Image (cartoon, rainbow, N blue to C red):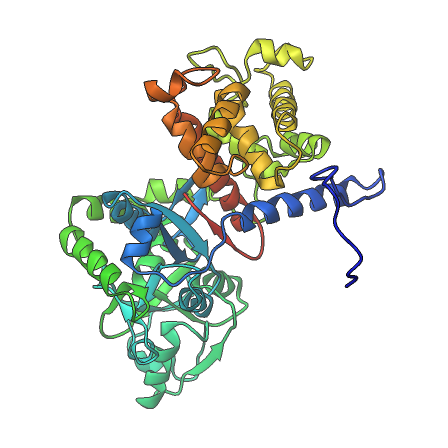
Length: 481
């Protein structure tokens, strides 16, 4: 604004700015910390770009749009799972790609994400319909054939004909394929009352049916079979005529990607991997019950140690879900775990490190979480203050796994290679991988390190953490396994 004003030299390149709350309001401080950490980590992985195969292959990441449900994609303790997830990840691995899951709540939101370039393909149990084709969406070959079923309460009598729908109220999401099916029935003269429920998922509507809140809903047969496996309060009352094809959805400008996906489906549909995966999610009742019991959802515990994670996350300024993600990575929630190197407890802290922070028994859950949290904060503080919040987390985790010295070696090497020493993903992580090669290790101050371990460690903790954020909050964002 003023020509006579000039910027001088930078005295302090970055200062810490924080929000302040009263000391007697720990709940608000915890909520603020969770928001800030999750926001910074989320924004560090977001991107929008309409891509076909060449750009995807160059990036090494396939961004997969899906929804959180027990058939497509969910989080079980610390593992990302789901029929659609397992299939698309199997495809990606065959092409040396990682997958980034972009979670949306409804079909319309998934289509919007594909249109804007927030993701590359929808893998979310999408039915091929004429309406969707007319709207310009492109489908892969089918990878699943299903039937649509009318779902009622377990006490309802099965229909003897589809005519019994007359006078009944069926609630479905307005952007679902079920809406098209019900409207076709009305055109055939069946006086069924259709009630659109914005934002509703099949899972939610089934629960409303058995709770008596609504009369009927519609579900795909594989989802109805899955739900019926671990609950006895619902019943398919009628199977509608004709089968439905489920496929992956793409934009009409993705010729190369649809070719790759179709080739994969042609090779694997009803093959060994496909059949084992299908049975695991839709036929093996014991497995399905276990998955449902420990599925991560809003209002449910992630681990038996959530309260400890919340206590020490508040003390050290973390999001407790990040600590739980690291805890699962380190010990699978086993306080008696011991590594080959002698690290102990939930957070796999070396006894000497624990004593450094005033704890003498890492196997004790509280001491183990306290020692691990204190150590992680100490490591983060050793990196430059100019690092962004998300980057400090990534560098702190890498140092927790590989040691601060090796991470600093990787930062110096990244700078020599023309990469950004203050960014972990795509920069310092690539330099870390090179430190396992003799010609780079010889030049490093701390020598050789098995670089693939911290690279995998940071990526898996971040992705699990984003999964925890997605599945414990009302609105979903994205994660990259």
